[in-house]
Image (cartoon, rainbow, N blue to C red; front, side, top):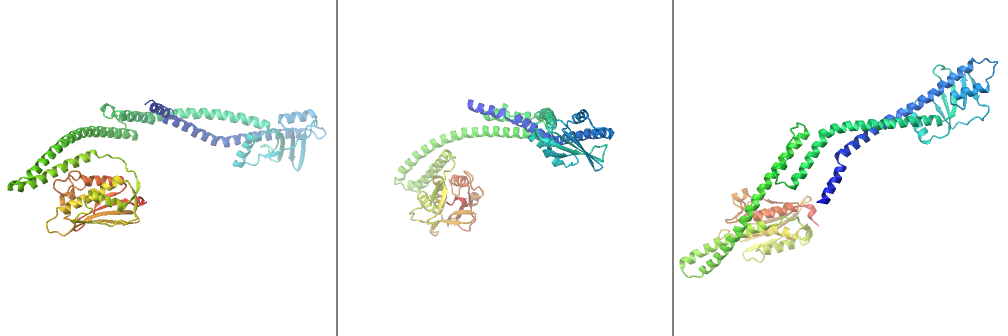
Length: 476
């Protein structure tokens, strides 16, 4: 019990609520990532556009300097520092002008970033490249200032400035996305928790409680009265639990009644056995009237004893699943014919037409009971046939088709009466002879179905013909 509670506690810890809120957060973060990629690419291109605009301002400043005046090192340093650049190249009207520091060598650009290229996938890939591979590489930014469309500027600078600002931007986006995901997941979860999770938990706890003591009517769930699918599930669960409660009470009553009947039947059988012994002694008397009535008395007592024994056997029957083993079908039927009283019977012929090499996977103990019951019924029907009838024969036929295996038990007796056909396979109703219980056919049908097959009555003009149908997979 402690281990079971520990398992239930562990499953509750990672139950529907945990999975639901985790899934919501994960899905929102996935959406945020999809939004983040074009966003960070847009941040990068705008940052590069700003550098190009600053370089354009520097170009206009240079244009204002008279041709007779050279740029001083201080002016160059201020221009480059305002653009965070190592060097500037200004191209206009076929002329190029390089602005660089005189106190350090000209840097060599590692890669170029052309702001005129606005291809979305390329922008995303370039942004990710700077975030994950960027370091102290030198990049060459190429672009046209918005207020000077006839001018092309090139800015040589370290990508470290851009990468640092992109990392800050990404970090801010991450925390904002996480906050939005948690807040949204919490709001959705509170809604779904009230709408779904809590009712499902209530039904789950009720099912566990009802399973522990199904005989307690107080544990039947009371529907909440909702009109949606959850309310319908509660109503169906309540109906199912009421049905189970009623069935369990009925089964308990039947079990108690069956126990009482079994005890009465047992005592009755002992009484009938004693009466049978007395009838045997009475049959030895030489009184003509006794000799005339004694056979009828013995027959009646035999029927009563057989009826009592059949009821006891049916009550003691265990519903165990079959233990499938490879079995020689012909040998199994030969052994069953001995138990059914057909083997070496002087008055009834027996034909076993099953091939010698037919092996099937069945439970030999259970499967043999099918043929014992069927062949015993056939033998009793032939023994009770009208005087002067032709010789009785019980034949076992076999046929294997692509879909199934057919094993038939056929006799040339008087056949089943209409009442027996109408109540076939119904306990105490489907017997074809007076004093019979019909339990043999019920047991045979249950065993056939337990083996994945079925037992049926095949219509025939003469005699009785039963067919046991097995799936083709039963053949070994």
